[in-house]
Each structure stands twice: as structure tokens, then as C-alpha cells.
Length: 369
Image (tube, rainbow, N blue to C red; front, side, top):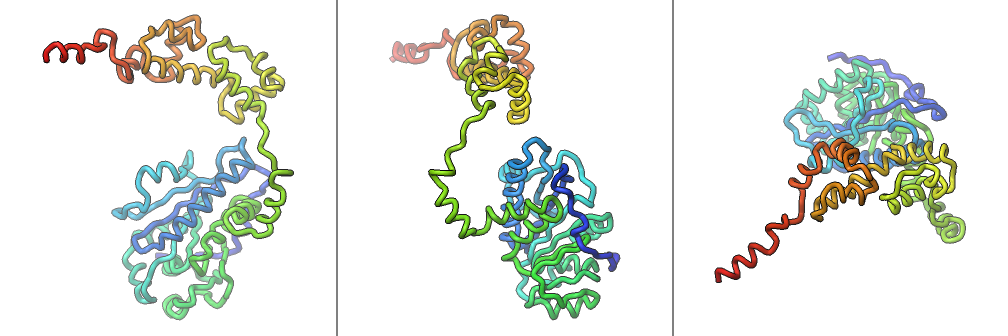
């Protein structure tokens, strides 16, 4: 494997926060010897960062995605249900230059054991080698830096290895520059962090450099104890920090839910929302992801589904109760939304016995006893 990779300051890769952010995909490497706290600390930062980005830039596609990756044959530390609810996958494959692999610290008993762990995972070395060769980004925390060191990725990139492993690192990787005492190092392709307890600050700093400098500050303000902020917000509560007022979009959704069976009237809806029709349409689509009419159709379909599950009314009556004079058009809408016609839906999901079966079992049994 190649032993030399050029290193430079990663700050040159920052995006302009005033413009759309270039997407970044973070891949969290997991190994049996990995320190679990490193993984979950990174997940905490990524989830908080994603929330902050959604709040600050709600109209833009999510620029930050992440997932846990494992070498072949190694199970994930998160079960499938947890993974589906937590990890975020990019809508399309990003170039290596916008993909960051985070290598966790390794729970090594001593320095020789650290070397044994690296030898035990040639597939990880190959993965990181190929990733770096194509311009991908790598961030290694604590003893996890043994992998980029083995690949020569730390050559010419000053970084501080953990003090307990410093002599061993200098002996086995003499081309490395390990004389700095900085807790973190950031270079063009590889970044390192000297202690697992700094993982939160490390991941936040990487996001600040690779996505938006303000994002780092936001993450740390949420995740770290802020004594002065605690005092200030306590003083402001109840006087200056009042409950959030509703919005035109909220008022519109509430009106639609309450008047679901009424004919759709954009002018009446805008008046109920206390805004103009044009403004309501723009804000509704931005906040809800659909037009008010599409939202109303979804509400009506959901009501029809419940009515077919728990009542014996025919579909014409249900359509009328959902605001449709033309049962045929609502039937088409229902089938488009659910993938099945109303009669099939009722047969599959009904929670009521059919009328001919009412009390039959009970009365028949009583007559036989």
C-alpha cells in the first residue's frame, strides 16, 4: 500500500455559509475493538447538527447525512430498527471528497495490542487506503489513528498521539510528525484527536470546517454545559421567552382538520389563516411539503380509512362524510393513495364483524347448551 499522502490545512475546504452547503456524508466505522462511547458521542453531535441545520435552513435539502459502516462479517452495534430510525442516508452517492470516514478509538490493553488490532483488520486498512487514494476524508480519534499511520497518511501531518502510545507510534512510524501537543489536528485529508473525551468537540469542529463554521458553535452550545447561558435563559423565562405563537400554516392546518368535510376554498382558508392566498400557498408548501389541497386530500383519505375499518357504512356515504359529492372521484383518489380499491381495503383491515355474523356465535352456543 502507498506510504505517502500529501497533507495540508483542511480549512481550505470550508464552504461559504452564505450559500447552499455542499452535502457531506459521514460514515462511522465500527469494529469489535472500538470504544462505544466514541461512536455514540459522534452520533449525538450529528443528530444535533442535523436538527440545527433543519431549523436554520428549512427550505434547503439536508446537507448532512450519516450512517454506521462495518467490515464484512462484523455486526452493527445498532439493531435494524434503531438504525432505520437514527441513521440518515444520502439521496445519492457523494464523491469521496465529500465523504468523511470517522475511525473510533480502539480499546487496546497496551501498545503491542494496538498493533495486533490493526493487523487483525486488513479490510479496514484497504477501505481507508482506497478512500484516501480517491481523495476521501478520514478522521481518527485516540488510538484509531493507528490505521492512517499504518497507511502513511500522517506523514507530514503534525498530530499528537495519545501519551501512553507515543513512544510506540514514534518507533513504528518514524516518518510521522508526533511532536505537537495540540489536542486536535486538521489536515487536507486526515484529522486526528488525541483523547476520546474530546470526541464531541472533535466532530463538531469537523462539521464546522466541512459544512458551516456557525454549525460548530451551535452544536457545542447545545451539547456542552453553558453556565452563563443557563443563568440568562432562567432570567428571561416567563417574561421575554414566551410560548411560541401559532403561524398562518398552523392556523390553516387546524382549519382544514376542523372543516374537513367542507368544499375546498382557498380564499376562505387564507382568511382563516390571516394571510394572503399567495403567501399561504408558498409557506404551506415550504412547511408541510405539499399544497393545502393535497393536505386536505390526505386528511380525507385517512378519515375514510378509519370509517371503513370501524363502521359498516357504504363507500358512497363515507365519501360524502369526507367532503366528496362524487364518490367515483374519491374512489380514484383513495386507490391512488392506498394502492387498493375501497372494498379490498375494507376486507383486509376491517375491525368490525359483518352484519350477518352479529351475535350469531354467542346465541348459537347458548342454544346448544
